[in-house]
Each structure stands twice: as C-alpha cells, then as structure tokens.
Length: 123
Image (spheres, helix red, strand yellow):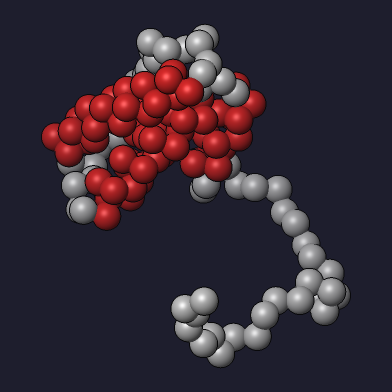
C-alpha cells in the first residue's frame, strides 16, 4: 500500500512488435553458465551457487575483492567437496548453505591475498 509514484509507463508486451533473443555469451557472463550448470546438476548445487554468490557479491560491494573474482569464487565453491552431497532435505539445504558460505569466504580470503591475480589458474 505504501508505493511511490513512478513516472515510467508500465511495460506492455503486446505493444512490442517483436522480441529478439540471442545465444548467451558464456565467456562474458560466466555466472550465467555456472547457474545453468548448477541447475542441470541439481540437488544441493543450487543452494551452493546461491550462498557462494551472495558471499562473493557482498565481498565485492565491501571492496574486499575485485568484480572479476565473483564467478571464480562461485565456481571454486561449486567444485569443492560438499559433505552434504547426495542427501537432500531441509536440514541438508540449511547445512549446505552454511558450508558453502564458509567455503566461499575461504576463497575470498585467497583472492584478497593474491590481489586480483586469477587464483584458479592452473587448475
């Protein structure tokens, strides 16, 4: 009920003549590729993706890492050995979230020490 007035006209998709879609550029948008891979893998990959993304973005916004390290931290966290893999219930999702946040913070610390070097080179 407490909405602000927005002078922008509401989008009406029926007024548009056509929409064009392009294949995503996974080289430029690495996080999109990681999200699609996590979705395909399923299970606890999505909570790991979400938690590591939130930690990495938070670290970037606080100036602790550079922007280009965000997808690398997410990728590294997804590749880590999740001790809750294979199980899937509410408790495992909560535990996985905590685990992934802690693991992402480890990688964030590594990124901070390296100061912008790509710490995933040579994997």
